[in-house]
Image (cartoon, rainbow, N blue to C red; front, side, top):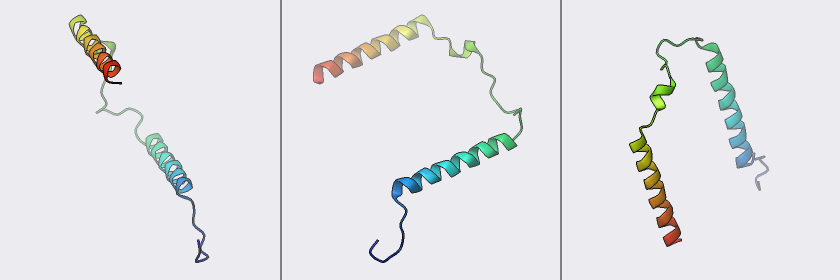
Length: 72
């Protein structure tokens, strides 16, 4: 800058902050317990969708697409 001090550009600062944050997060994850007793147990049955729910999702997406096309 005009005062003779060196300034690190904003995006480089944000990049370094991201890198240090990722290193810290990975380090904490690796140092933690391998098996967490409070962890959720996931299986495929938790994500099953009933046909009626799937039909409503598709109908909603079609209505949104029609509104998008109409007002574009």
